[in-house]
Structures are given as structure tokens and as C-alpha cells.
Length: 328
Image (cartoon, rainbow, N blue to C red; front, side):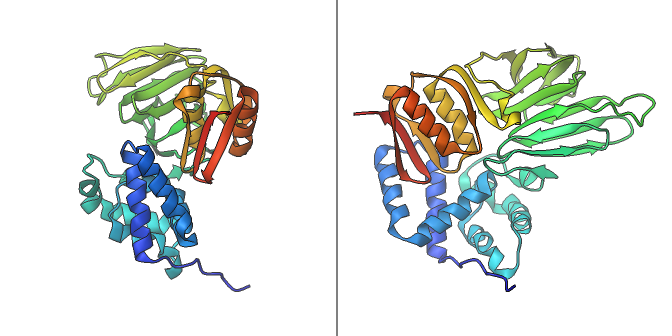
């Protein structure tokens, strides 16, 4: 069977798609900006194709200059697989990507992570010590085991870890997790760690996890212990209790999103993690309450069910731009 080559994209169209990606992800887009984007998206099929390829790369694309982005989006036309393209992006992004966006980071570590998931995907893998790691949507991790300790590095997103017994060792090695906000030592058989805009969220089932905010170089200072059924939010400067907003934090591991009397605005923000593009609700209905368990495999059905129960209208301006509002 002959191989079908992906459609090549006009460099100007790719530049435009990157421009919109930056505008919508890193700026507070007003209504006029949204209308202009929607008009651009509907002008030509090539615009939709460029946007789809850009969205498929997810957050890894956030810091890439336009010229390099063009090469990557068209890389498959030269026999380059997506992972190879991302590695090339990562290597070159360290030179120009961060400066181009005026940001303080480069996406290189997450792009080159040993294990990763795309938007809307959940994945599981097992480590040599018997530990099972589950990746939520758009997540990435590395593992680094040696004779003295076991270490997982959360590069992006969210994980659930069932800690293995390390049964091939006379004495189980300590199990550590490193995040951007600090390090954790697990004495728990199962825990969850998630990167949020306001810090790293930790939740524990059974046992305990000790949190060391910051670099972890002075582990005796500022540590906090999280016990079974507890939750904690921490940054590099300290930790605080995490306030429950009605979301079942663990439900995604079963392929569902489960809410109990949750604000619609918060529910939509959570659901948007599992689909590309923009998903939002009107401010007038953001305070309505959602309860129920919904299958993540079909986001559109979730929106339809929520809209039906709360008497809302779902407007699909495009597949990548969806708004919930009150029925007229």
C-alpha cells in the first residue's frame, strides 16, 4: 500500500496559525479578537488544517519561533515523525524560543520526556520497581532510578502513582517526586500530583506524602506531611490547604469527570483540559451548579448533557471554539 503524504502548508498560513496560538493562549482575548480569529479560521480549509496540526502539538509549541514552527508542521512531508520533529524543536528552542515569547522557560524538558500524553489522552506505564504511573491529558514525566533512591520528575500536567514494593531489593528505596515547586517523598501506596497555575496540587490515598517546597536542598525546613484523604497545594515558597471545589480529583483515572455541586465555570475550565481549542461559558451562567459523572471520551456529549440539565445553549462557532450560554 502506498504511503499518503500529509498536505504541505503555505508558510504564511502557518505563521498566521502561530500568531493566533500566541494571541489566544497568552493574552486576554476580547470579543473582537475572538470574532477575528473565527473569521480567519473559516476563510480557507488550509487555516483549519494548520490550526489542527498546531493544536495536536499542544503546549510543546508554545515557545517556538515561526520559522522553526513551519519546518516542524511540514516535517512529516520529509519523513520526519512527530516525536523527531519535537526533538528538533526542543534543541533549537533553547536558542530562540524563550526570547521570542519573552518568557522565562523553554519547553525542552517536557518535549523530550520519557513518557508523555497528548491533549485528551490518558496513558499508563509500569516502572522497574513495580510502580504504576498514570498520565492525565497533556502530561509528561521522566524517571531516574539508582541504587539509593527512586525518582519521578513531573515535567508537565498530572499523574497518579501507585508506588511499587521494590520487591527485588532487600530494603525498598525511598520514592521521590520532583516538581517545579518542590520535592515530595512518598510513604503512600497511591497519590496524585498536578501542576496548576497557582502551584502543585498533592492528594493522597492511604499512607502519607511529605512535601518539601522549593529546591529541597534543606529538607528539614518548611516540610509538610499530607495524610490519607488529604489534599495540599504548594509553591516554592510554602504550602496551604487545598479547598475542594466539587471535583473528584481521582475520577479521570477511570476515564470520567465527576462533579458534586461544582460551579459551571470551574467545571468548564476542567473539561477544557481534555479538548483542543477554546471552551468557555458566559459569565451570566458560570455560577450554575453541575453534579454528575461524565465520560471523558466524548466531550461533545458531556456538553450536551450539561446543557440539557442546566437549560443552556451550546454554540459551536468552530470545532475549536465552543461557548455555553443561557437559552434565549
